[in-house]
Image (cartoon, rainbow, N blue to C red):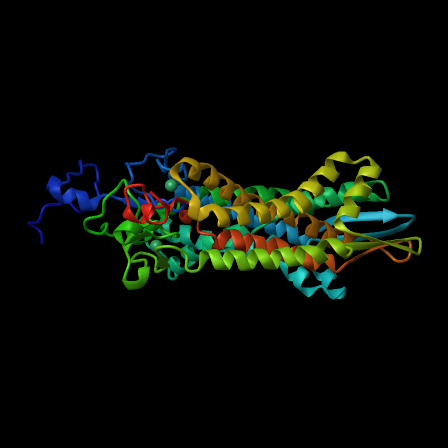
Amino acid sequence: MLNQPLRFLPASGEPQVDHTPPEARVSRRRLRACHECDWLVALPPLYPGQQADCPRCGHTLVTRHHRPAQRSMALAMAAMVALLLAISFPFISFSVGGLGNRIELTQTATTLIGFHQPLVAIAVIMTIAVLPGIYLLGVMWLQLGLLQGQPLPASRTIARSLAHLNPWMMADVFIIGALVSLIKVANLAQIELGLSFWAFCAFALLLLYTTQSIDSDWMWFSLAGEPQAPENARTGTTAASQGLAGCPTCGLVNRLGSGGRGECRRCGERLHARLPHSMQRTWALLAAAAVMYVPANVYPIMTTTSLGQSAPSTIIGGVVELIQMGSWPVATVIFVASVIVPVGKLVALSWLCLVASRSSELNAVHRTRLYRLTEFIGRWSMVDVFVVAILVALIRAGSLMSVTPGPAALAFGAVVVLTMLAAMTFDSRLIWDTPLPRDPDATQGTPG
Ligand SMILES: [Zn+2]
Ligand SMILES: [Zn+2]
């Protein structure tokens, strides 16, 4: 043991020498399969501040940060403090004609339960506070272990879960919802922003920075090292054509078993050459979303009672009302978030499903970009649901003025969730899967 060379020990001042013969080094490369187009590439050595992009579709494979553990830890702790402040002080208060109401952040969800909208209430509290809270605790637990040089128990399970939580945290969308609500009622009543409002703004910003600070490539390397790449893996072609698959969570390239399935050797994530029944699932979710979009627009999303008179308003009705009030910017925000984005997503994903099998390298880049856009903008449709949650909780002045939620709130929330799930089940690698011209399969269906 003592006579062995020190080559596998970490460099402590001494230069680290790689004694492996060059022919063996081929299998020691850090291989990655692009998550969006399945191209197999070897990662170059990365220094802090650098990132590696896929040469075929441009998707960012790895981003390396300066001091990743310290950075994520500091941001997660600051975000957690801001979240605790945001839930312990008054959020917004309003007063009209001597009557007033002051709400806390959590009341935006709990008030909805009183109006028999428990599902919307759960969606609100989960996306703005519970899931971000769990996420931040997970990040702190992980980074604490990494800073000590000894990963804490359950680190792998937590690291795997963090990636899945990411799209469902909507603190930033909630801020836009709060601003829209404030502008809607600014003419009717006096509004005061509480300490909690500013704390929540800080929280949303810090949460965004925390999610961006996670260097999952570095994190998985620190947690579990880098197992050797599968033998005979060739770069410059797709992983699936060699019976390989890149792990969507930790990035490691694994050899798949029979039936194109497997499990990641490093993080335990289930692997598939392509997501099973991706097209069928996406179509089913899109159909369900399209069906829900009808009641979301036909029924009122909320009913405003002012001086004993009730006025229900639909999503479109709300936009028209805002235009009549002269608030063009807010009307635009609501119109884009509630009409353009969901309809655009339905159309774009349906079109991608239709053309995926007929894509070529020439248009695949644009189609992948369109897919990335639909995936990115989906969550912003939640603005209108948050506006309802805030107004229902805030505007409580009896018969003088009050707001109740309508059935469209649940239907519209369902549209947002269903289209998000549809974007997740769509496997963008299918866009790139057209057989190459030299492949005999490609010429089978075409005459000549
Ligand atoms: Zn790619
Ligand atoms: Zn993995």
